[in-house]
Length: 386
Image: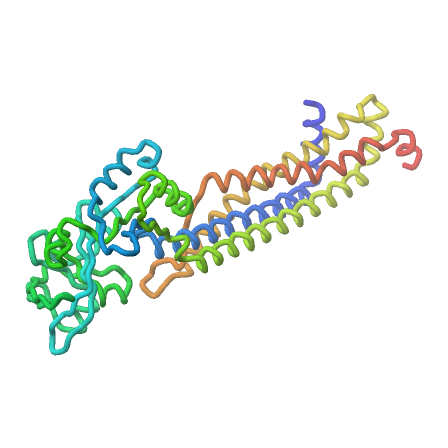
């Protein structure tokens, strides 16, 4: 084996240009894999984050004939104390919501939502998205950025709200939020859960329970586990069922990315196999002499398998570096008007390692045919034919 490795290195070193071209071909293939894979993963991560990153991924709603959940604290305690479910849940928060009219020069329809901010912070990250203070006191409220600008309402002002029962109540604006969604900034008013419960007439009930989990792609399966655990006639929804078009698009992206990578690897494999096959012909005289001196057929095969392995390793290393550089450059040139990358750079070490291993395996497999061809060379015929 050591002899085969030495001969393989000598063959590669004696044809430097040919060796460099093969390594370059493998490197480009790996670089395309890393770049396309990282780009698609970054795009999908960005889409998922913008869709459900700061919103409920699984929502527990009341039964169809009831508009509130009265034992919500028991349900939350049950889920948080469940060994089976608690490890997956990253945030869980009760929410009270009610339609209201904002009494201005004309009535404006809005949705007043009440949160337990100590719990809701893990989902909505209010602390980083408001100017002013959270409405911890009774009859305080947050308004959205667009709502504030449209109606000229500032922090410290008072607004008059009317509920569906005709009750009017004044709320002081303690802060202005920006959830980066114009429709929510226009339509949502956010208050303390106790204050909104009092105004809604729900008593201690809540409108729904919202939660996030560590793996967003198992939300549908996890929702079924929750339904089995709580064993009540509650409606449990998840983001996957509500965003089927988005999931279809993500699946299409993944398939397209995989097909591109497969065809690139096939092209690399064909290139390596062709060049090494030519190398067998070019070096048939040396191989014939070595066989005449006692070199075994199996050792001859190993020479070309080692060549494939060495070329694959060097190609994979340079390809990863080139691919990471290309990905980094893309985030610097493809930017939004605010200077942020169109697609955030996502480096997945596992994906990169798998890409490198696949590239090396492809290079070794591509060397199998030339290796078999070299093992079948007859030293007598090679030397006779010169």
